[in-house]
Image (cartoon, rainbow, N blue to C red; front, side, top):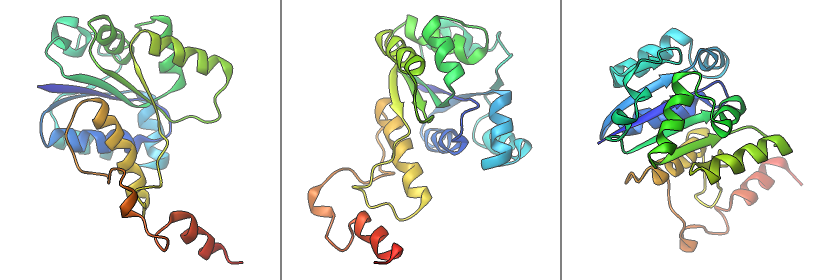
Length: 207
């Protein structure tokens, strides 16, 4: 059992890194990273060399987008993979997948996954979304992709950014069929009036 995780140039590099961290505890993980993802990471996550070193400490199967001859590019290889997730998925990558443009290792892997009916999760972080992006998401969904907006919930009473990241990553793992406990699932008994996130935010902002 193995998974393929791609990290592209949308904001939210931490989502991809955390997904790899969790999956590497239980399975082989192939990671594909784009050059734009490395640029984004410089601003919001880790210096690109540190990001690469961090991923390589969890898996030796790290590929870059131009490596079209890497194993994940083949549908025969993906036949033995449990699922594929692009975390985060840039709108450019989304558009290429929706249009069937397999011009790099990320899009080729994604399109092959759809072709052989493997789970494909597209973690979309961009907001707002225009008509073009919504149409592309619909096309990808009709082809079999799971569209998963990076929208953290608040019913699990997040107390930190890490809690909010884990909620989104947990949803990705759910869609890949991975058992985990990195976020608290819905239970109406777990929220008291004092713990209510809205009440906490209101108390900090003053009258």
